[in-house]
Picture 1 (cartoon, rainbow, N blue to C red):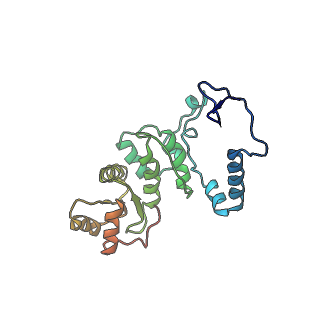
Picture 2: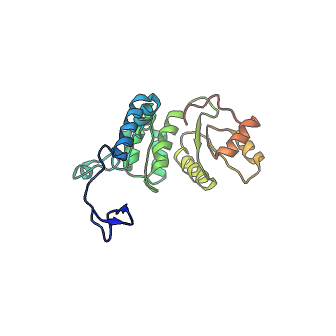
Picture 3: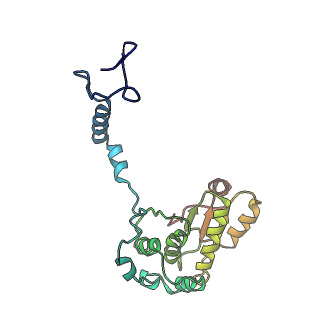
Length: 219
């Protein structure tokens, strides 16, 4: 062994790793791994958290090989009603994206899911179209709630939903900060079925009782 000032040298420049270890000294990483394994199996909350994984991953949304080219899915085949399909055609959509083809039928069947996708992959229509389809023809009132982090995204999502719902008789409103609350309150009174909201302004409207979540069916 190479000794430097009475201490054992670490592998690196000017020293050779001998691979020796003091007798009886256990690997710290092995101890940590073993402890984590014991805690994982003994803690039911950790087991539940480990099972709660997203339904859609980036890999799952991309069929591999020649199978991808052979798949031809239409919006009509996904189970959407004619009023929503008219809105889809008016928006210029011809064929659903991967996340839309996989998510829409499941949401229509009442399955709760988490969808992951890159910007421009069609996430808004993936959750928006089945929401509109399920809420059309129902009792008037706030029945659908979409929570977004920013004002810009709030406006964008609401504009898309209004385009999809133009033949379904559904009213889409927004709730975000930076504007007079009375303007949004007046819109709610004219009729609201779905609200696209930022969290802070949504809480403000709930505290003032401008909105109620009693009839909300989908989030």
